Length: 396
Image (cartoon, rainbow, N blue to C red; front, side, top):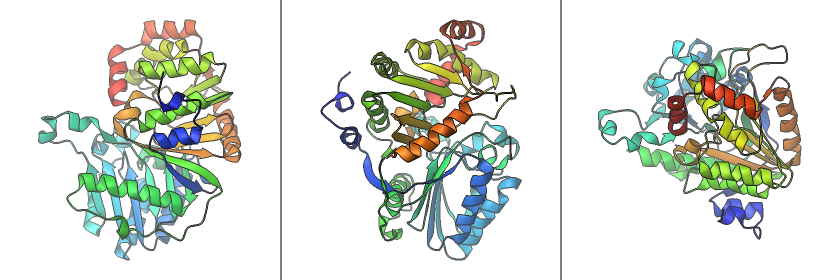
C-alpha cells in the first residue's frame, strides 16, 4: 500500500497533518464512561453557560429522564445564551430502546433554540438517494469558547437516561481547551452553513483567552480520506501494540489489508467489539467475523461480565497505539465512518491518558470472549446473515 500513511520518512504527526488534521493542544480531560454521570455533568455546564452553546448529536430526543437537561437548555436560551443545535435527520427513526421513551426535539425551537435537522428524510431527497447516504454522526459540545466535549454518547434515552445497568457502555471526554473549542466551533459553523439557509459566522462565537494545553492533539473530520488516512497512519506507525474498541467493524479490502500488514509486522493488534443482541445485528457481525480473524488480529467480544450477566451494548470508540497515542471521538472503525458520515476523531499524544484508558479497557475485557477461527466459521454458518452484513456495511 502506498501514500503518506506508509511513508517511513514521515513522522506520525506529519502523516496526520497530510490527511487534514488540525493541530490543537489539550489538557488532561475529564473522562465519563457512565451516561448518568455525563448527563449530570453536562446539565450543570449548560446551567453555567454565559454566552453560547454549540451542540451536535447523531441521535437526539427527550424523555422523562432527560427533561432536566433540556429544561436547562431552555432556561439558558431564555436568559440570553445563544444555542445552536444540530441533530441528524434520522433521529426520528431511532431503533434503540430509546424509541419507547422518545420525544422529538422540535419543541426547542419554541424557546429560541436554533435547531437544525441535518439532511431529513423527504420526498425530494428520496428522488436523489445519494443525499441520504451521508449522515452527521458527530457528538460534540462547545460552551463559551472554552469547554469542549466529544465522544460517542448520543443525546437520547439509551445513551444518557436509562439509568444504571441499562445505558449503553460509552464515553465522553471534556476538555477545558480554547484551542480545541475553536477547532470544533469552526467545524460546526461550516456544516451549519452548508445545510441551513440561516448563515452564521466564526465571529459569532468568540473563543476564550488561550491557555496552552499540555498535550499535542490532532483533530480530524470527514474529508477526502481524512478518517481512513488517520487510521492507516496509526496502524502503519505502530511498533508494538494496537488496542481498538470499534463499533460494527465492517471492513473493505483496504482496511483488511491494513490490519493484515500490521499483524504481519509483529504488532499485537487486539480488537474488543460489541455484539448487538438484536437478532438482525448479531447475524451481520457473525457473517464477517471470519474475515476479521483472517487478518491475524486477536478479536474479543464484550457482551457479558465475569459472572455471565448480560451487559449493555458496548458503543464506545477508542484506539490506543504503543501505549502513547489515544484516539477518541465519534468515528467507528468501519467503511461508513471512513467516507459516508461526518465524524470527529481526536488523536492525543499522552502516555498518561493512554495508561488510564488501558486500565479502563482491561476492566471491560475481564468478561470478554476470545474468538477462534473455528468458532467464527461455525457462527457464520449457523447464524451469519448476508443481508444484515450488507445493511451494516453501508448503514452501520
